Length: 318
Image 1 (cartoon, rainbow, N blue to C red):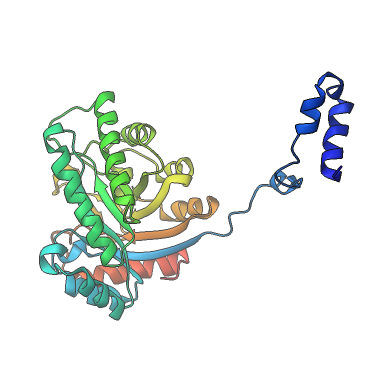
Image 2 (image 1 turned 135 degrees about the vertical axis):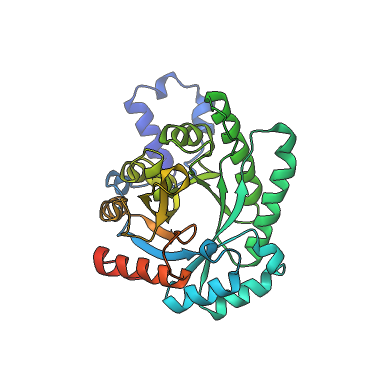
């Protein structure tokens, strides 16, 4: 009798089981499939390692002039970039985009694919669009697809809307996963994802395997939320961030404007402290939607201001 089988039977005997088994069962008892394992390793929590935050910059400030954006963002010293769907018209060949970014030593971090929908009649067409964007992104060497929630002016959203939105996002996330692309849901002012409670409801109703959070710090603050709490709450679903500042403005729609980092009211020291506490390892994309009226500065100069702030005030080396 093998040692493993003997140990098995002795164990049964000790439990008073062998005497109750028929002789045929004893004869047929197979040996264990695997040797005994020491599971003590799992008694100690696994250390996730230190945070590693890489900083990129979004091309939106260049208002569609993406080749100039690529050149400027690289020249300032950022290692990553986010581009928008207008890129398909400007540069329809994704391989050329991949080569151009490689020449400028830029990682294609994220692609702004557009919006989600609550309308069943638009469902299939819009999913097909996002899948095509994912295929383009994959061929161009990119990583993440950004989706903003549904925009419907004057609409009050409810729990059923959040579930509908979550189901749409989950379906897009499933489809694009075939190309190795992950979906980031972007919280955004004037959309279904404006208030923090809406972000909570949409994430809760969506499949965490396919829908991650792309936390925009400026929109989250402007929508009444605390990015630090969101980072801790969604540490396991945080795909990447938009690092964005916001400042009050009586001249702007909604009474606020976005600004270079350190120029507004977003608490970036607390945000980076939280990212370190949750051991975040990924990308933060600085985004400035456009130059503020009355401020004479180029997109490249704005990128330099934000970089200087991160390096000198936060201690983040870009």
